[in-house]
Length: 92
Image (tube, rainbow, N blue to C red; front, top):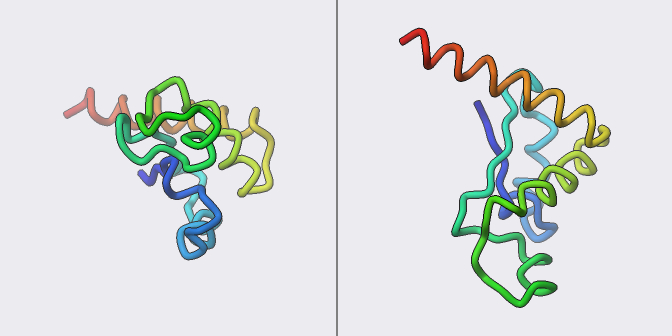
């Protein structure tokens, strides 16, 4: 599984941004890397440097935009992949 975080979706990371569309959709998850790697645009607007799980929606919205898919589609993809991953873990 591959899971871009808040750091990977900022415009300054052109190499990471370019790699996002190469992630197979059946391997895509999202994460925050809390409390680290806060998206810079959020840290400026919220005046904080601490990343929290509550910002996952922001990361998902930005990632969907970068992938040129709807937030609903991204949610469906990541929900399916999460269920698949945890089923595999449970089977171990």
